[in-house]
Amino acid sequence: MFDEYIDNLKNDIVKETCNLINIPSVSIETNDPNMPFGKDANDALLYALNLGEQLGFRTKNIDGYCGYIEFGEGPNLLGIIGHLDVVPSSDGWDTDPFNATIKNGKILGRGAIDDKGPVIASLYAMKTIKDNLKINSRVRLILGINEEKSWKCIKHYKETQELPTIGFSPDADFPCIYAEKGITTIYLKDDYLKYENLPLKITNIDCNNNAINVVPKKCNITLEIDTSKISLKDVTNFIDTLLDDFDITYSVLENSICLHSFGIQAHAAHPDLGKNAISPIIILLNKIFKHFGFTINLFDFFEKYINLEFNGKSLGIDFEDESGKLTLNVGNFKFYENYLQIGLNLRIPVNTEIETVTNLIHLKCTDFNLETYIAGVQNPLYVPKDNHLVKTLCDIYNKMTDSNLEPIAIGGGTYARAFKNCVSFGANFPGDTDMGHQANEFVDIDKLILSCKIYTEAIYELTK
Image (cartoon, rainbow, N blue to C red):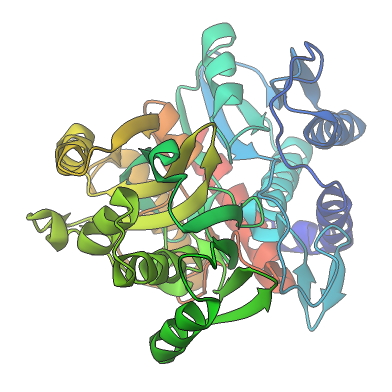
């Protein structure tokens, strides 16, 4: 119905997606009451709200936590919930991640698909309806800037603003998402002071400040050797016997060995799409320490229960249902105060209580004298496939793409789970690799325009 109108907006959609990408909006929690998530995230929010005003919408900045862009009248509120913050940059980019590049019909840059491109597509879908129809409902594009961290933005929105009657989040996959796994982050801590007199000592851990919801691309460890007790050559000789099993290199500097582990970055919801750089280096460290007669409890636990390819079965239970298997991302390894600490990000099938998994991990950790700390919990989303919203959105996608696909479940977590009567909807297309959180993240321009058309149809149908 609106294809020609949206085709004429193509240049604007591409331009504004690029402009947003050029703002390095990594969320950083601060004590600034005006910019609680830092200047860069705030700049992205202000830019989007200003663009909304220029396009003729009503806008509101909600205490710097989030904002919205709105049009229409009536008691019902259709919410479209997206985010403007992004995960940090990483190695492995062919272009500057915060300088949008158009190449081979794609926009490359951090946030291109997660979630700046889909947000702009949604905004111009709203413009299409506003400019061509009068609807008896309000449509509100809600913009968060702390989604990649702790969701404090959306919590503040829910505490202070009207909640949508119905809605969707353009932050996942087509044709439509009916289930999102539960998510939690658990930290395992081992008191490192009890190991400080060992002749092998970890003096530095560098994982490139990896975000917990990203499969880490690299990890470097410095291991100091007390050569009065252990020969440096004995340590390197032992490491040499193990390197065929690990993508790890090392260098020697005086009495220290620097271990270098390399991986492939991916979204923690799809750890199978990446290669974790932290896991093998922990296994290697455990083997080194044990070979010379020492046990680091945290490493020993890790090798027994987590290892290189965690599938949940090592915990004694096979967690799986229609939403998929239990997955785990080892996203963090560092010194924290006097502790060695490993951070695990878990995606838990919808029919499994999150506490069942975390309690089981805690129980296993007590056998190794480890402490555990739960850093955050997002309860799963489950909306039956025959629900009106799910059926409507899925039918819209199938009609506009001449498809016959069923709604799907995902391991990712979107703002949809924060609201009742809300699901996630696009903008990844079936068969596409999810480039969110990966190096060389991109959005295909033709598919971005098609998603705008799909979102336009969704607004039309859901406000009729």
